[in-house]
Structures are given as C-alpha cells and as structure tokens.
Amino acid sequence: MSTYRRNHPAGGTAFFTVNLADRRFDLLTRVVNHRHDCVARTRARYPFALDVWVVLPDHLHAIWTLPAGDAEFSVRWWLIERYFSGALPCGGAISPSCAAQGERGIWQRRFWEHAIGDAADISAHMDYVHFHPVKQGLAAQAAEWPFFWFHRALARGD
Image 1 (cartoon, rainbow, N blue to C red):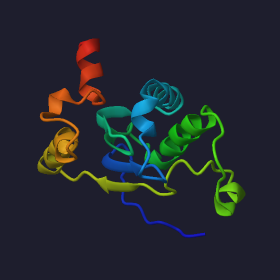
Image 2: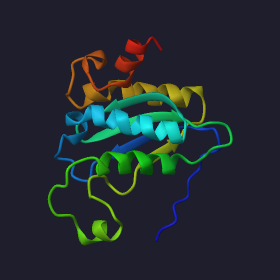
Image 3: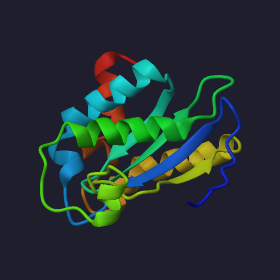
Image 4: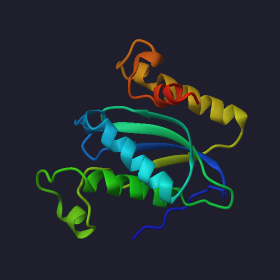
C-alpha cells in the first residue's frame, strides 16, 4: 500500500477535487440531496467549516477549514464517500480490486488536495470554485449553477 505525504497543518484550510470513478456519469447532480445528508452526517461526527463547495455532474470542488488541532481531512472524505455509496442501490459489476477493498467503485480512490497558504491562495481557489461551472459550459454565469454551496448559504442567511 502506498503512503501519501500530505502537508496539512492542524486547523488548516485546504482545496479539494473529488471525482467519480466513471466521469461519464452525472450521479452527483442527480442525487444532490443525498449528498447534502452525507456531508451533514460527517460534519456532525467530525466538524469542519465548509468554506465553499460546488458540485458538478461527475466531480466536485471544495474548500474546508478544519478545527484547531485537527488535520484529519482524509477521514472526513472517507466518511462522505462511504455514506454516499452505502445509501445508493447496488448497481452493476465492480472490479475485483474494489470488491477486495469493500468499495462500490463509485469514487476514484484518491482525491486531489492543496493546502491553502495565504489570502491570495484562498482567493484564487475561491475564484476557481465559483467559476468552474462556467468553465465547464454548465452555466453562463456562476450564480446560475444550482449545485453551488452559496445558494444554500444565502437561503440560511449565512
């Protein structure tokens, strides 16, 4: 098993990209309410600040800030993916390697992360998240994309 070196200080902020294993599917936007529930369940067990989040049909981008003294973002992603996969009906065949790991084969095994370094870094990554649906041709303007975290934040008055 590979050991991945991660540079995330406790209580730090990080940018993430998480992909479906099969990028041809639109699963993330089809079952968006289920995904919200999985994130809420995870945050109840392992709190984190959800700074920004955008869901696209086959992948998502997020920026999180962990509590002081906590650097365990991987366990949070593991739980979100586990809750999400476990509540979906079983589908087609999965690869032997996924079966051996107890996986459903819905998610790519690894995610991409970047430790946010300073105000300019977070600003650049926030801009990237905000405009990614436009870049992907899914919306003419960022505010038009319905699977964007700030719509929920505005509804709550955040």
